Image 1 (cartoon, rainbow, N blue to C red):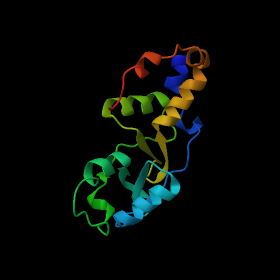
Image 2 (image 1 turned 120 degrees about the horizontal axis):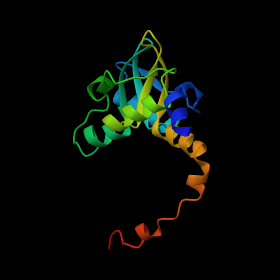
Image 3 (image 1 turned 135 degrees about the vertical axis):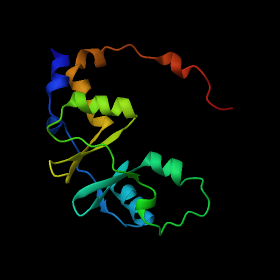
Length: 154
């Protein structure tokens, strides 16, 4: 029964935060500021209302952090992932789980039938949904304290 709900529940019924969007051509500096101010792990990049890219914390770690001489005035277009896979609000939670699992995504832009950006589904939205769907299993899960027995560092 619960598996059917995962396969049939539209994404629109999840508790989604609004997506943070910037226009194509916005400077990397402005995008990083916007991420910090909005406490967002990703930014959707749009041309008008159309989603053309996504820039995530992972992009920052891989493409910018530790690379010397990155000019923060450069446009986000040089660092974003182009033409991200998208879903719609009417796609199901199961479809979101599948695309996140298959491609290793934590954020998937939501677009309408015309490709206009209407939101963002994040892995944390899926986790909250599953925790509500399986409350007994989540609340009664044994602790994994053995994971904390090893020292991390000196």
